[in-house]
Length: 143
Image (cartoon, rainbow, N blue to C red):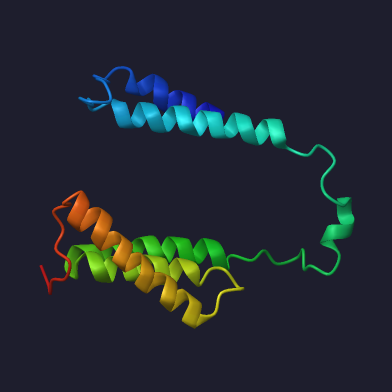
């Protein structure tokens, strides 16, 4: 994380960074790169060298078959967001990505995923459509 964040911040310096009041095209990548690098440093500083409980925490888990449910749901949610955003609008795209990604957590029920997705649709409307005025229709049919 430190290497990727530092690389992004270094590459962003070739663009006009600007200031907080007048951001240039390199401002956001620079800021995200610095935050990513700082996050990596904080993770490294707080890492537990011995591990919590050693191998005792792994008793009862199947080690033979990796669980790809979470990764698959995140990838499918991202793909669904792209297609729903392209052809259906902001509301269906937001619902699709949140609902599908939330299904990746085995502790979530379908109803909890539904409520979370509906709540995030409201947040998306307020932040992206109303406050930031992102040029994406709330709902549309086709191209």
